[in-house]
Length: 190
Image (cartoon, rainbow, N blue to C red; front, side, top):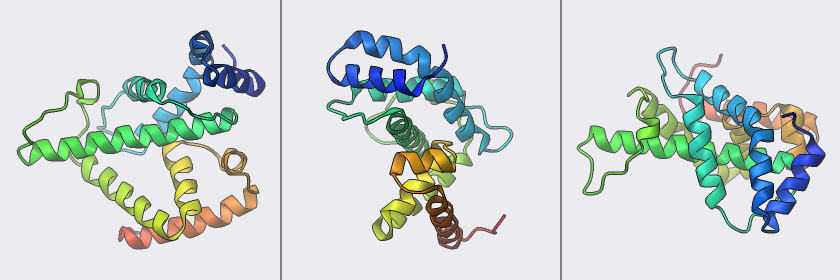
């Protein structure tokens, strides 16, 4: 199914109003875009990365339908929320993986859907998540731009639409946030 911004927004509003059929109609319309977002995240990893984009989409979808009382504004807001949820899925899994490497804890969480994440991925995701939390303390808007771009795969215009700012402002703040992250994470600029 093709994705129409007007149709997606209408389905989101109907879902928010309690129409479960709207949710059933929504998924086929947004599935390919969600896979694109997940694919973007997976492509950021090393070539031996084996996390399936489908598994990430499905886990994010399960978390999304458990959310209550979301005041969906429009299609862009929906994709921004999906990006945030995918970030949480990846970071939660990375932290879980790190605990297992250190002997685990008394409770084991079954994340079998995401079991094939390489060991070197977990510390990078956790470090990025911590950096984004620190950036959000200083400048929440820049942290949100990074989240939407990196985790959401949204382009400059889509981010501008989600945040209600100009695409030129997104570009300026992205560059500033990127420089801050490179410095914070002690990375070499690309």
